[in-house]
Image (cartoon, rainbow, N blue to C red; front, side, top):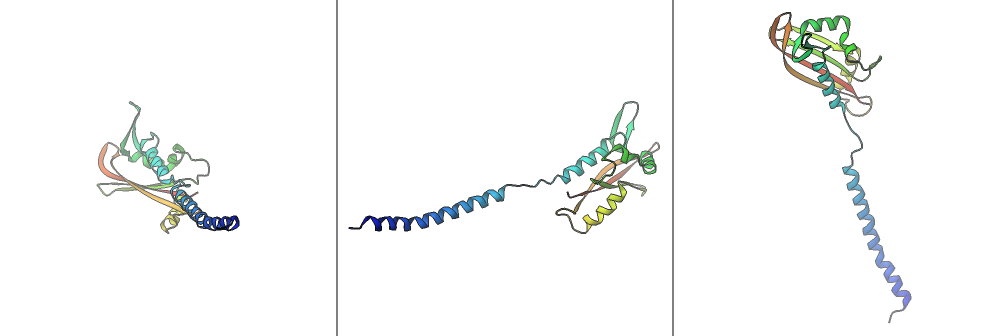
Length: 176
């Protein structure tokens, strides 16, 4: 017959594997929880899409605006409006990100079927600086940047002449 002291010692020794199993189980549960929880949200692609839509749908940007009906035609790019925007920087005034814009930069290219090409910028100095960073492969973490390219089939209006063309937007957004 065993005494009470030996029975208690035996039970304590038998609890060691159970405690180790519980520690491993808790560690596995914590690892699973941490693997499924996302603590970072990358909204740079959303910002690029919103900026592109603001360019296309704004009456003060590149799309043709009919003053009689007060309607913007986002599929028609007004070349005269673009040339005016290049000369007086009205595009940066119509889509305002603050006095010192460190949020977004863009390059626009309008190519029509007659091989005429119009290039213009939104926040040109910032775009050229961040394009180098995005092109070098530094797209992760602070100090990096991402480049998004969007192509739209449009009609280019120059005076009263309409031609088919492509509007290419290169939008660069830095990582915060």
